[in-house]
Image (cartoon, rainbow, N blue to C red; front, side, top):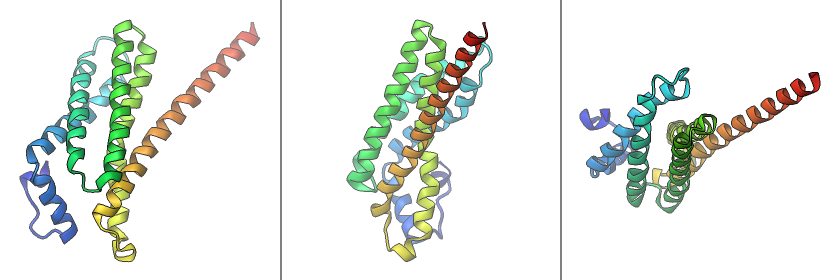
Length: 191
């Protein structure tokens, strides 16, 4: 959003080309990144909520997530990294929307623990784009050595960034399952 409002005048050629590519689809880009920004800002209020009194952030997260997911599909049509980037977006965006749908379904059923688990998955997948940025930074920083252009490394960076977040949150959720199971077993044996 900042780059649209204040376009850099002395950006390196690779970054200037990316800015032009995103500016050519400014409305779609803004329709994607603004709801994603609000989604990220509201997410901590949902994940770290301690009472059922503050449900407004959660109610807002579902439609915001829908807009982010739909616009991600639309943006992947003109992906910088070609089919490799597009395949990462299609897979992880589908996982994001599926997780969000599961969270919503469990919320409607009153299954709050399952809702929270699926919501954490969806948030982690969405934050995969933030993990993708430093990976891209590494590719940009080493491009003079690798001679890779953004259209060659964007797809790889997307796969790495989204995979890291998806795997880390899944390992974390499963480790908490194992820990809870061990605690239940210890309590049961103590009786």
